[in-house]
Image (cartoon, rainbow, N blue to C red; front, top):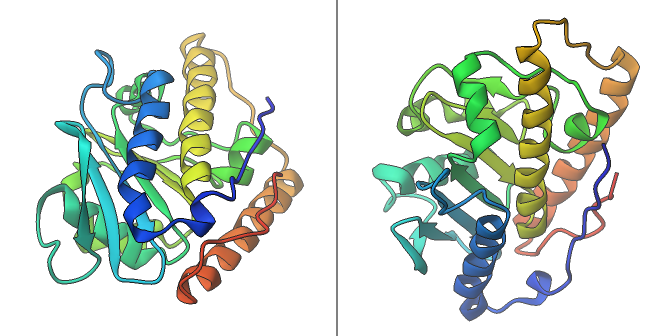
Length: 233
């Protein structure tokens, strides 16, 4: 399985007034891929961290063309905004959050199990596993740090799928990658045969590269900058 990560330079120089449009175009891309605001995946939300401040731009499926700024701390005390805020507070490397019902990833909810490290690209960008958190996503804030501290970028809750990205482009890529990996894994699991996982060394190397990118991203956001120099693989 291979894909191409493209980290566009446009968002790195974006003004604060550009972020609503960046959120809308990200949502539209995911809609075109069948991952957001479709009959199969009708509900969800997307947000982007605004560098250099304490805000993020939040877009919800019932208002897909009207994203609004939200405070990272204090103001976002309930609802879906609190979930997004909890992610950003717990993961200083994350630049985008996508909460969805994307079709194949949602099938992992029905399996009610963690998706192990099946593909090297999965481990490189999504983490060692796609964990199943047996709770509704609205319950995430109280335990966000503990759940997200391992650095993975995809989680399956009892009602929604959570996908994270270091940048806007990585968020879109990760959502698409998660859907491809989930489709392959679900179909393989349904055969009843054993699904093999990657050798330990491959998992170690791929995850180490991911954690290095996450470290660079966290440092960039702490300086009020968009991350650069993220590796394609």
